[in-house]
Image 1 (tube, rainbow, N blue to C red):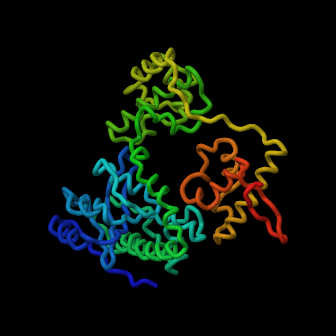
Image 2 (tube, one colour):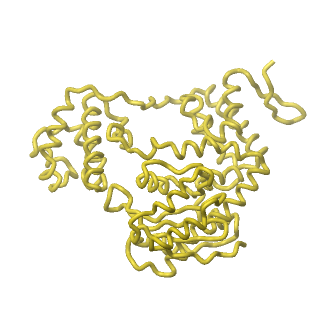
Image 3 (cartoon, rainbow, N blue to C red):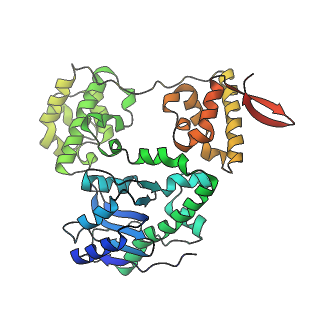
Length: 387
């Protein structure tokens, strides 16, 4: 079991510079953030936790005018930045600097390659790998309140101290198995800036139920979603405080063009009608006669035939073989829905992305292309080149 480090608390420019110099040249940095976003569009950055080989610190961005000395180290391309489920943490850095730190390593993405659960929690990872049961008493703490208690700082620091230990263990095991290279596409995808830009033009694609709309209704939804995204960003407010998704869908269907009709839509807030009613009605009116932006929605596949179901069974047999060979739970490697996606929309299939492509995806694609087939020899199921 690792020996916990005693974390530093940094809330002054001098101590920040000293700490930044002390970790310059580190091989890796374990990073985590605490933030709030219940009342804002942009996450309110409240605390940065960072650990290196023999040190750890909690940095207080609310007490510091600038994190520049530390950010210079974090953005050093020779240092690996380690996260667990790091997308929201990376969003913080993207908003701070307009770019993402690289290279990165995400222990949640890597864990399944060692036979651990997919989407494993940080606490679960630490328990499984290090035998440590973390105290999660401060999971719902208000990290914007000061002063932070010693218990809060210890809790926050543990999120990177043990992350660094887990990372080193994962790294050694993956290297021994020859699987480190399999993760490069997953990590490259994680630091693709397009995931963090939230463009107003594409905002409608993130609304559940948008695929049900067509023609004029879809055009109206696209206009409303774009307006909401821009307004929420400008005012730094949660999107739902301006218009909830379900209300926008109803507006797209009903298309009110005057404020009385707008106010009659279920769930429409009176304050929103007063502040933005005329703007919303004008948007609806203007978009009614405009062609919607092309959609990327794929048509839902129909019911599978008996032959297709049998084919899925064969593909699942190969998944089970490869999972057993790599000491993985077959459900971690692929489920039936993944196989259906490979059949119906191979260009988007999860099995042809990241580490799954190397482990089984390419083989399944070759089978579907007629290059490989199944055979039985000595009571064993084998995948062989097709004669």
